[in-house]
Image (cartoon, rainbow over all chains, first blue to last red; front, side, top):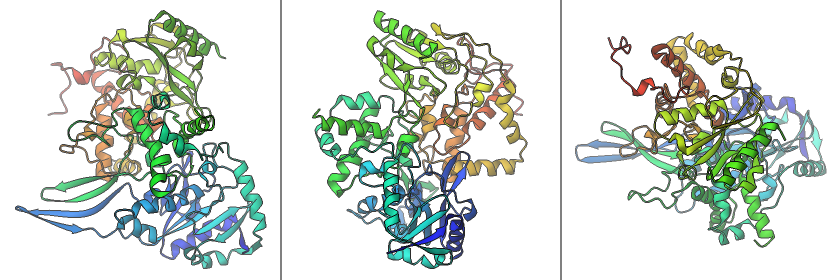
Length: 346
Length: 286
């Protein structure tokens, strides 16, 4: 199927039309030296130059969210459900392929033993317009290692290919994406044949600094729970939540009750396996009592436990945990070490 | 290899060889761009991992509060003048015995952040050549501090109306994701259980809503009033790009004006917020 060809300069106009249609618009904008996905930003501030510092996670799984309301009356308590927040129809415009790909990775989790109506309601109302990477936007990128790539269409409804500085090819991937076709149509400047995209894909993949395939990591991890690697690499972890909170696939949450006198809300808040309280038992015992054990848990969850349970690696190679770790503890280095040791039978 | 790197390796090697310290904490070349990474060297053969360059931004004193460094009986720490200020604070507060730490000071012409810019602390630095140490490496550097640089942004904040200031901080704190990278990177956030982790009952709301974020960010700043040595580790670590140093420097300014005290200078000094004097200014009460 041929792709629609358009000028990249017209992309903000498409975004403006989508916002005018009543959708909640999320797009990457510049703040200081960084880019962030922000809700409700002016379409003209669309900035696609590099990968944003936050992921798109917060627009489907907010950092804090009310899930029920309670009210005490004497000895009785009444509990009311909170309807999944009506964020309404949402268009995430200019997501990176690694962000879009996080959705099919985490969907099985949110629909496993309990169907999370909050995530599902937002997911059903969200359309993803992805901006494929002509070249890797950052040297931390390693999407190819986890079986994805700079042109991956996983999780995307519309895929934009910046063929050069000024021309974009548009592919409508899903039915939800095709519903946006009218917003793009008037900016069409002809068509691009599918073959032209093959060169785009190859250039993108070749531009990654990190490309080791992580195909033997799961097996190695399953046999090396106790290993010198964990203490060696993770001594420097300071136990903050930067890696987990910037990660598009990390999804752990905490339940908190916040009340004022006799009424309040129960909330679902982001939580991180790197925090000392994460597995602290009421007894005072903590099965993950040191930071290397907590760091090991993060790697295991992503590369062994989640694949065992859901058949997918819980990582899209976006590289945020590599680029933004305050102490340069690189997940890529750790997992690549596991892969190398598997390859040499160590 | 720079002279400073060579000097650090020589002294670290000597200390480890002679058994003066169990390990040396320093920086090694990182793996992302030009970043450096904290490293704990336990054997003299491994001292070649240590480096010093203008990307050695992490304040390593934050490791004194956590294992494995906490449980060492002696540790050598490679440190710039600004990092040593944190150690002075920890010694004043009896958090670290002076004799546990061997300070391998390095003269520093200034560091650079990831964006290539010099931090404010470097413009205001008066300890390019550290004054409190066990050994020192590097050519001596005379400081030429622009002391006013510390409070330039604070003055812009003070010029705002209360409403403008509230709006400013509301916008900044809305970005907070409660990852606590600020607290974890801080060498002087020393509580083994932070008030944000006291959950029986929950003292500070952990939710990243405006009330919870105001509570967290303000209490963090208050706990550092008169203690923060302006190393900028919190702001550098913050993944949400919140200007945390604005709050910290505002606090520092208030403490300087009220008590004539600047943190991280003299290990013998008594920090004002942990002492009581009959002639302390109490005009704010009346």
